[in-house]
Every structure is written in structure tokens, then in C-alpha cells.
Image (cartoon, rainbow, N blue to C red; front, side, top):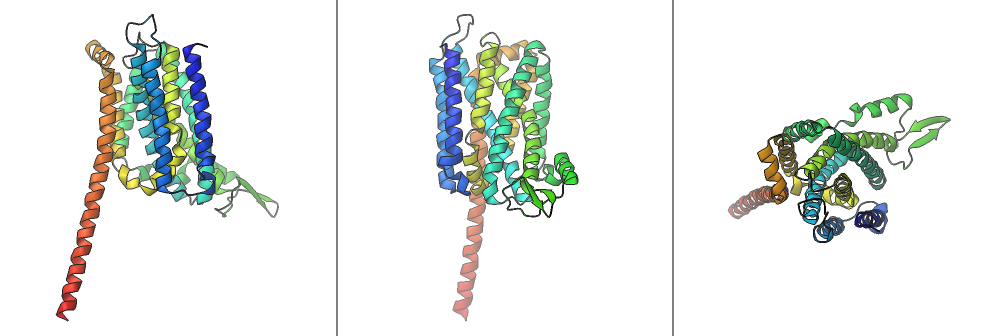
Length: 354
């Protein structure tokens, strides 16, 4: 068995193990779980992904036909792609949370709908990656189009409120389905279709699935140019197309593995990620700008020989945005606490006067 086949086998086995554990063993089928438990399992899944990237960095064999260090490039590219896609996945989960909230989805139905959304997301991303990679391989100018898409996406993400961009009832699939079938008002139903007095109804579950599915397509359109930009940049002549496809698919799928755990954690600690969207926006702009500036030979050569720099920018940006969210949230809590203490002090003084 050659190395690439071995890594594909390991990856597929890990995917099924993680997906099974994340869906069943951690009690998700029972509904809500604690933030502490969610964060614990999320940490396990992130550790597995990073260990997978480390194994590429240290153990992937050297390609005899390329001048650069194949293992180092594979490892750095995987971790860079994984962190970029994971941060995008977190932002996507915020949208899912808003959809569930706006459409009044019962808590016991959320894990099932989230699982279906994740499976659809994986299928769409793999298809888009294979098509996108092949297009860039055949028509190099497309990479500049992807760069423009990323810069535009970064701008929208930075200056557009997520709540303004999410309106389930304006979704074309939602409107189409609700015109064909009447909607069952029971939001606690676990089915997609119900029947009352001989009339077939669609449930809110089906409408939510349609909205999530169409949203997944939009997410993939934003996500795929980013991963292609990360993998392709500086890898020409070092990695083969099959190795690039492997990195793009595995880093993307690893990023959505374990999202069920993260989903329940995010609902309890959303304040810690209030500035993550801006951090992700900067990362997308950075990747898009690199893709566009790659037309300049000096710039392309610099990033080809400094792949660690891109990883450092991604890690620093994510860490800074999360830290900033925590600090500002802490300042807000301190201000509220001081106000409460001042109020208590005034009440005590008033009691003493009486």
C-alpha cells in the first residue's frame, strides 16, 4: 500500500469514528448537552485534526521529482487550510443557530437537522473542490477570479450584519415548498411530512432542511476559493495535483467533523466569538490578496519560500480576534458589576439615613 492510499484510509476511518461518536456517544441524540462537555469533545476533535497534520509534516515521504520538502509543505498547508476552514465553519454555525432560532426549531430536532446539514455540506464541498482544483489546473487565470471572490466575501463579512443576511422566509426553496404544500403548525414534530384529515402537510423540519441546504451551497461558494488559495499558493512544482486534492478535501472535512459538539458549545459561549467574524474576514482578504498578487513573480516567489508566514498570519488573526472578544466581554461584565455595586451602595446609604 502506497503512502497516499494509507493516508486516505486513515482519514476515512477517522471520519466515520468521529462522526459516530459525535452523534451518538456524546448523548446528542438526547438533545441539549452542557457547554463543558461540548468544549471537551470539541477539543478532542481539534487535537485529532492537528495530530493528523503533524503526521503529514513529520512522516509524509519526499517526492523525488520536486525540489522542496514535501512533508513540511503538506503539514503546513493542511494546518493552514484546516484553521481557515474551521473558522469559516464556526461562522457558519452562527448562521445555523440563527436559522433554528428564527424558525422555532425544537431542541430535540436540532441535532438531526444539523447532522443532515453537515453531510450535505461535506458532499458539496468535495464536489466543489474537485471541480475547482481541476479548473485552476487547466485555466490558471481562474485563480485570480477566486481571489476577487474572496476579497468581496471578506468585505461583505466585515460590514454586513449576519442577521440582516438571514431571512428564512425569503429563501426561494422555503417559499416554493410552502406554496406547494400547506405547513403543519406543530413545530415539535420529528417528521418531514404529516397527514391530517386526508391532507398532506410539510413540517417545519423539512423547511429548515431546505433553508440549511441552500445555505450550504452559499457557504461552499465562499469556502472553496479560500481552501484552493491556501493549498495552491506556493505549492506549484512541489505537490502533485492528487496531493493538493488530498489536502483540500481532508482539511475541509476535518473542519466540519465534530461540529455537532461545537454547535452546543457555541450556544452557551457566543460572546467569546463576537469578533471572530472580523478575524475570518481579514483571513479571507489576506488569502484573496495573495492570490491576486501572485501574478507578480516576486510576490509569488516570496510566499512559495515562506509558507510558514501564511500559517502565522492565520493563527495570530484567529487568536487575536478571540482574545479581543474575551477582553471586551470581560470589560462589559466588569462595568455591569460596578454599576450593580454602586446601586447597592446607594441603597445602603438610603437605609442608613432612614
